[in-house]
Image (tube, rainbow, N blue to C red; front, side):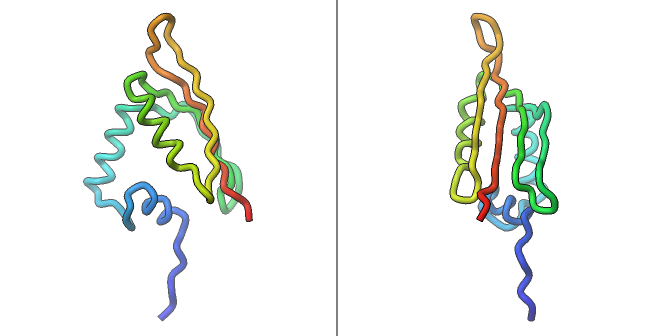
Length: 108
């Protein structure tokens, strides 16, 4: 019997959900939570077929900024380099932050 190679999308599921693939309910909960915490304003991917770099900008509410930024920083490891630029907006009372995110795959 042939051993199947693990695809990139499967690795993402394992990293995000700590198991092979989420159920429909788990995926729905994750998407719903994300919609309440941030909005992806723009994103780009570089590399074909393997993605080497992802750049994006997300708009995060002030209340969720700490949690979202920490979750992004937790992606940093031996395989992925994470860089963030954070810009608060709202005069005198920050309403939220724009986070410029760069995820770069470590080249071997």
